[in-house]
Image 1 (cartoon, rainbow, N blue to C red):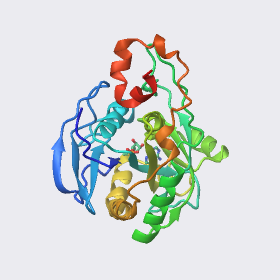
Image 2 (image 1 turned 60 degrees about the vertical axis):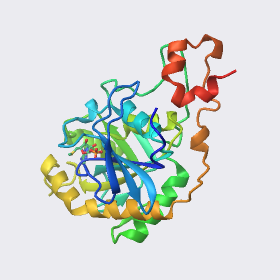
Image 3 (image 1 turned 45 degrees about the vertical axis):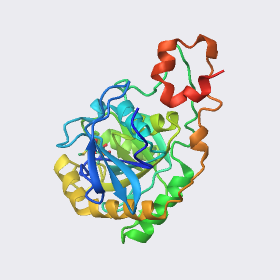
Length: 292
Ligand SMILES: CSC[C@H]1O[C@H](OP(=O)(O)O)[C@H](O)[C@@H]1O
Ligand SMILES: Nc1ncnc2[nH]cnc12
């Protein structure tokens, strides 16, 4: 296993494929029992704190939301030592008040994915039922909001439900209207299974969502397309980067959190029945719960 080289992991989304703020940056290739991450990771320092970065779609945006090796990305960040993850995403808005250019720190997720993306590290002889009632870390959300307020002039929304669709197509107008009727706030294609796997890996996980568009529900507005998302992200990526730097600058060094014991009451399988090969594969994630 790799040495602990990161405290914080950053997952970059559409429009955020590099993090120039990382000092003494070094590229590292990490292999995991769940395959290769989206791309090489970069480890370095921000405000003296060790940080690892991975672009979830790969450099050059080669991976569709369905193709992202999310298990490998989360596992690789944990293997490098990260205990907290900040996810950066472009999202569409389903509400008038969440205008393009604003930032949202979501607090809930609705999973509307359909392809059967791998959503758990577990199975093959071990059953783990983690709670994702609150899929984002409350403590890290507070830190992230404070950082966004103080480091940017953008409007920051302190809550929002993110509906994760399968993609890669954007929604139909009827779908977009349906999501609005359901009182959902923002829409994207990547929060699932990322948030769920971070919880299974007992990592604190919070997201900074950058609103790029009004999807296709708003009359008088062009329906979203990829070029629009890219253009708005190009204008707003700096706000995300400033927020990350401020967050890391202020982040307490010893943040104890319940996310870090999320599986303490989640493993239902008789420990004696867990196959040795599964034990070995999951050692980094749950080895401490399988001893004895
Ligand atoms: C480029 S538009 C659609 C694309 O953007 C969002 O990605 P991410 O969450 O990684 O910023 C959305 O989920 C889609 O993957
Ligand atoms: N309208 C939208 N739908 C899904 N994903 C998005 N990412 C950015 N805008 C989006």
